Image 1 (cartoon, rainbow, N blue to C red):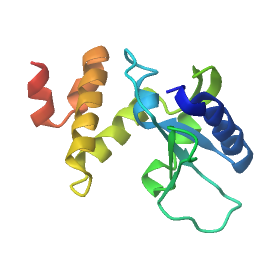
Image 2 (image 1 turned 180 degrees about the horizontal axis):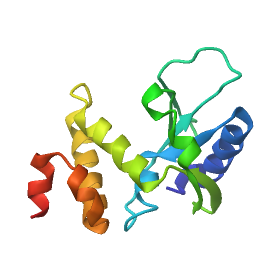
Image 3 (image 1 turned 135 degrees about the vertical axis):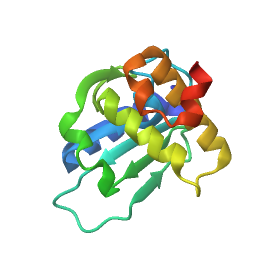
Image 4 (image 1 turned 45 degrees about the vertical axis):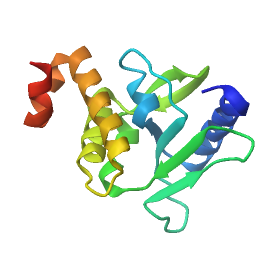
Length: 151
C-alpha cells in the first residue's frame, strides 16, 4: 500500500476529506481495521460534501505516479456512516473509519450488486466471511449462501 507514494497520497486524501465535510473510510482498508489485514491498493471513502454542488454517486481518482486508487461514494445509502464512524489509525494517519456494522453493511451492498465485476464481488465475499468469522454476532446478517460457508 505504501509503494509509489501511496502513504503520502493517502495522507493528502485524508486532509482533503477533512476539509470537505463529513467523511469516513469504507471498503477493504476499513475491513482491515476489524480483522487481520490483507494487502489492498484501494482506499474507498464516503463523502458528504454538504456545501458542494451535486456530485456523481462515485468518483474515482488516481495519480499517475501512485499505485493508490481512491474512490469516493456519495450514494445516499451511506449518508449515516460518517456519523457513526470512529477514529482509527490507518497507514499512520488518524482516519474516520466506518463502524464495524456499517463496513459489513456496505460490503453486503457491494457483494449483492449484479453489475459489479465478479472478481470484485469475490473479494467482497471474502471480506464478509473474514468479518463474520472474526465477529460472530455478524453471522446472522450474512445472506444464507455465505452463512453456510462458515458452518
